[in-house]
Image (cartoon, rainbow over all chains, first blue to last red):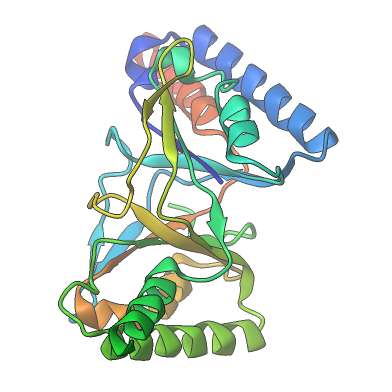
Length: 124
Length: 137
């Protein structure tokens, strides 16, 4: 999965430049989709909420301005991390401060898997 | 704000180590509660997509897309442990579902974001144009 983080480009680019990056980005996604490498992708709205803790408190997120805010994702269908990284380096937003987080998907929750393995070792 | 959203809503689960204080058995218990939660939502047709994310990964950044960081992602507060895309149209429904997640009891947090068709870059262009119009009016 590719997660696109950062919102600084808004401050450093003119509307025309933003438009160009946006077009390049769409074209990038279309190409990856045609090649069968991208199976899904969406921008995320800049608004949203965060639910946290045992009291399940709902708060507003700092999504509009945060450096770490996720602006969108792609789901890739590639066999290796290297392929995913190579695709990530093509992101048109990179020269303008966008960071691309590249994460392999897991068959099951890694926390549960580790706990199970550790429990097994503990029994030995 | 438009709260109807046909594209659905995404839940992003933080992996901020809610499980640190728990025994292995307790962790297994929460995980199986979480699976039951997921299965129930799935049976109700609410889940469009969802996966756990591995605890490794990388961040690519900079003009030439060099590798900045190679994980580990487990330790970062901001790290995402998994995601779900819910087939619900309103933020309120997505929030209501998120609030029932069992791991919240142990201090984790869930980010809820509507999916959209419009690239944020295009939204900014549109907003700049609007601001300019207002300034020139």
